[in-house]
Amino acid sequence: MEPDHLAQLSRRYARYSHSLPGLSLALGGLVMLLLLFAPLFLDEHAHVCWENQRGLLALIVALLLAGWLLIKEWMRQRIYQSLGIAEARSSTAEIVFTKLLATAIALVAFAYPVKALAAQPHPDPLPTDIQIYVGLTACLALPWCTLRFIRGVQEGILWFILCFWGLALAWIFPLAEPFKNGEGPLAMIVFLTIPLAYFGGLIVGLVQHFNFMRLAREIRSQETPDE
Amino acid sequence: MSKTPDRLQAILDLDRLVHEPARLAVLSVLSGVEWAEFKMVESLTKLTKGNLSSHLAKLEEGGYVAIHKGYRGKVPQTTLAITKKGRDALEKYWEQLKQAAPRRT
Image (cartoon, rainbow over the protein chains, first blue to last red):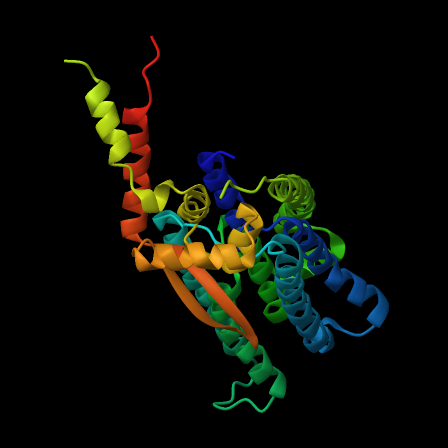
């Protein structure tokens, strides 16, 4: 057994145990697709106007984001931490990136509700709609979720897209309006990039997962050091 | 002057705390991470729990490894990390081993 090889194995394992998303990247791509098609599906089947669906859509968005976080953590514990937990040595760039990401998500999380509240036809100093408070709580929780659960650049980028798009759906319907007809440059961009991002995430996620399985096999086949 | 006395000296100067194979394996595993759970080091080194504990105790005594016992939820968790002193000792060990190795012509 070569000690250098051992250090390399532990380094590789720690990256999965700590930050590489693996299968959760593929799952995140699926959540992205669901977020894209949720308003279209609701519009098709609920037969109610968009304004009335806001609460339902916000709930679906919140459940999808929370569900992804929970499944991601569950998969990390059951698969990528199956041989024990280790934390990879983070570079300064990674630490700075996570903090910037949390700041960006905090800004987005505050910007959407503020814009939505400002656009209310009869703004009250204290809105009585419970939905507003639930939505605001969810928005306030996002930066905390980022710092608590998101590790590494790939997860960070995916999480940012999910939050950005999810909040856009939940708070600002005009942004989603063009998707009903598939018109407008924004709709074109999103319709092209989200499926591409999904397939990209699926491939990268599966490659990472199979690499991890190979690594785990390699670790299990290690020999005992002479004592 | 021949290089042999230098090589001999390098061998004699090797840190015995690091030189032992099981402890070298533990330090090597920990050198690749910020910190690791006891179970992870056990998985990689293939040492038994008792053996690993005794080697860790020696490394902790030498100040090469920091051991933290706590809880993750309700489950007891032991985390291990190589200290700066341990990392320096490992680097120095490799340097000395290079000096001690015969040069191929």
